[in-house]
Image 1: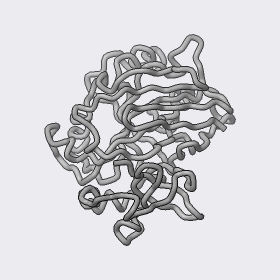
Image 2 (image 1 turned 180 degrees about the horizontal axis):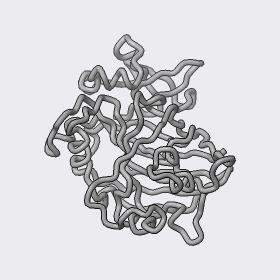
Image 3 (image 1 turned 30 degrees about the vertical axis):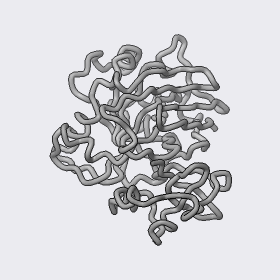
Length: 288
């Protein structure tokens, strides 16, 4: 099931994508849930029991709406993993100064308030950075409160998956002993194009992931190559820190980022990035 947030006739609505239409939650439930409200109130199970069809719920044609990030304003920072693919560790070892072999996950957070919409503009911040980079990532959406859960339970707490482009100002990232500022400039976190619910995926999650810049393939891998798996990460994060419905976990990026080329291939105004993940879709944005 694909769940999306969009702009329509001056309003922001969320709903289910069926064929070439979006059926607003308000038509189905009689209440105009935002995506965060929908997740918080555990409505997915109710939705899965309904015989959704365009006859009973005509919906709105997709060519009449503008897709927004599925969670335009996350209620807290995105939780991110650094260096979760061995190829990415190798290509950036000299840049970050972090040991090439990670025995423990590297966690940091990224502000995404607001998250950049599919098709939206990523700010270049040319006045403060000359090293803007892309990172295609699978993002996990938490579906219910998770505290001190085991890895075996972790998938039960996942609501769904989407795509996140962890745009990074490498020079700012390098100039600090932590990565928060270089990862959190305004309008540098595209998320979308929608959430695909967890029931649509087999586990463990093994999905092809890629990123194109101006049509050139830069990143190409599979999530099976993550060093720390989704169950491990969700379980570990839940130990002593409750995860909440709607929390977003970005699971790291594979090799092929701009910093890893010789010479580096940083993003410039007018460039387009397209992150693609199997069974989810494509997240395309332009640098402005």
